[in-house]
Image (tube, rainbow, N blue to C red; front, side, top):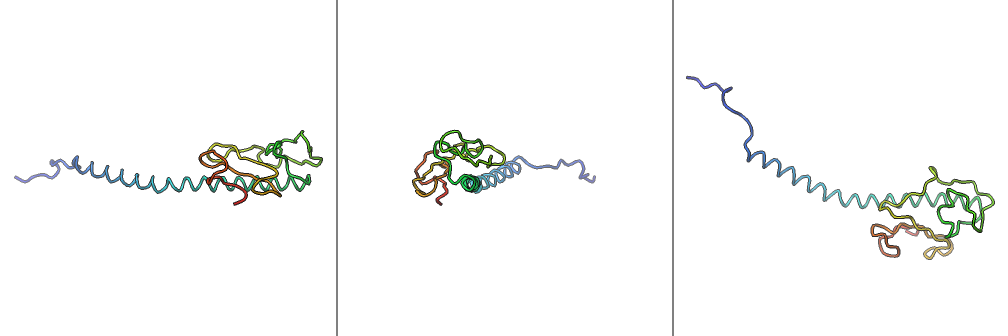
Length: 144
């Protein structure tokens, strides 16, 4: 009697399936570890680009009015006419499009100070970084 190959059961054994699952798990683990560092770096670049956008808007504000907003007026003066002194006479804002103040990639507010401590003849504008504490090594600012 001839054996019919169609009658034989074909498929994968449990061991083969487990081996494939383990290999896929290892590959995913390696990818997550390698890409995790890239995510942190991408957030730093995003914060630096947002600071550049604020720098451009502050430059336009200064060009129109002859001075930068005070620390008290803050970045809000880029989207709403300040009412505290010095009130700009030639405000042509909003200077941001869309007129929204964004948080940094870690959910913190950007910090603006005029005159600055790191830029005494200008302003300081920075993100306190991943830990949200200003004045340490992970700050991302306009002085870098």
